[in-house]
Amino acid sequence: MLLGHEERDREERTFADARAQMVEQQLRARGITDARVLDAMRELPRHEFVPPRVRRFAYEDSPLPIGSGQTISQPLMVATMLEALELKGHERVLDVGTGSAYQAALLSRLARHVVSIEIVPALARTAQSTLTRLGKGNVRVILGDGSLGWPSDAPYQAIVVAAGAPRVPAALVDQLDDDEGRLAIPVGEPSGQRLLRVRKRDQVLTTEELAWCEFVPLRGRAGWPRNGAAVA
Ligand code: SAH
Image (cartoon, rainbow, N blue to C red; front, side):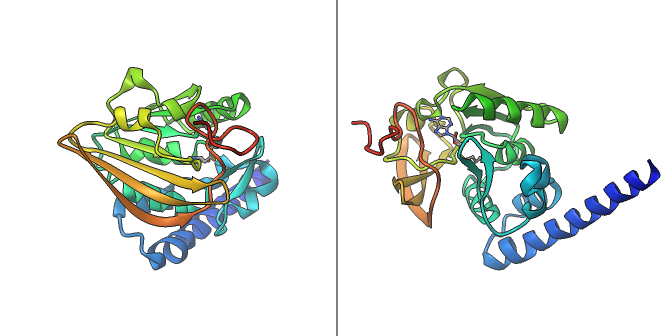
């Protein structure tokens, strides 16, 4: 019993060291500067969000499988998207593609309220239980098609999409706050996308290209069908 505790403590320390290294080498050294994002990623245990068989790889510089053919994004990509949202703490955020709920849990600390939407029932269930276990009370997980957003809680000051879209879904732009909305979304082909930031300020839209990336395809009405061609 005592040994069990000691082993667990040792494992937690090893993971904490790995996390500190992840932040320095994978994030800060590659240009992530938002201190709130760096602190959140240094503290949140990423290993709690992945299946047991890949736990020991939780702090590596890569995406990892989370079941149902989906992945938890590479830490650098998560940090890039979170930084792009420029969160101060007062925002209501829509997180499309809950997956493991790692990003949702980071958002729960960076913003006031998070609505996270997932289209695969098994992932939504696991995500909800992970968030409950870790006490993330300001995140609501919804099972549904996030390519249409979630209008009943709109407007959102920030929206983030963790799956590659054929184009920017109109519903997401509509649900952005008119004065200070920002949307981070990968747009392009299933084989590779550009990470875009769309800002809505005084109802005017501007789009910037932030990085190249490779996300799993966005499904649903404004996403890709299973055979690969975009819905008109
Ligand atoms: N943010 C996640 C990354 C998950 S990968 C994390 O931190 O682990 C992208 C997720 O988007 C997958 O779980 C996939 O099932 C989901 N997804 C794809 N299309 C979707 C849609 N239209 N609505 C909601 N979720 C979607």
